[in-house]
Image 1: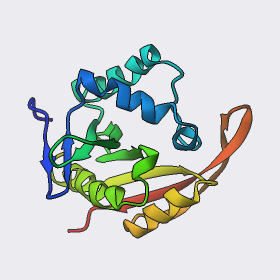
Image 2: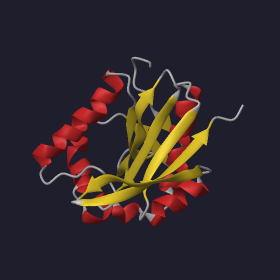
Image 3: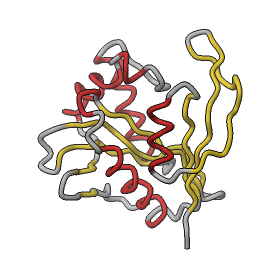
Image 4: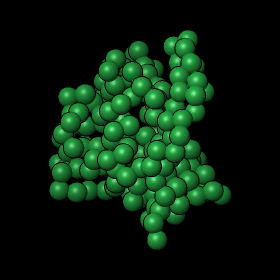
Length: 178
């Protein structure tokens, strides 16, 4: 990976590195019951949310992925976060993840940002495959993955425990086309 954090900008969006000032917005997202319902991470306090900020920084430092703060093009509105983790250079694959603050759901932000993240993975990280693991109950995310041309490859039944219950994960993937 490059030493300088890549900024991705379109007419509507700015994908940039997380900064200290983003802590409250990350907490707003990752403590909201509707956002964390299907998300694997949640925080009860601002202080605890610093762990997530460290996770974002460590991805790049350890070359295991990259996550962006997803903002309005003028950087005045924080929409959410998206990126790639579990980067495996040997097998040229990574896992995509994304979350939006609920007031921005349904505005096409994910539809615009996800392809930018995928293109960065394919073009700059030389990935061949990008995977998404979606809780089987998360219909909105599954619909979004299909709209973004991720192929549904199957379901891992009762493969994780969340809130004391087994959950199943649907596997989606996008493979680089030549």
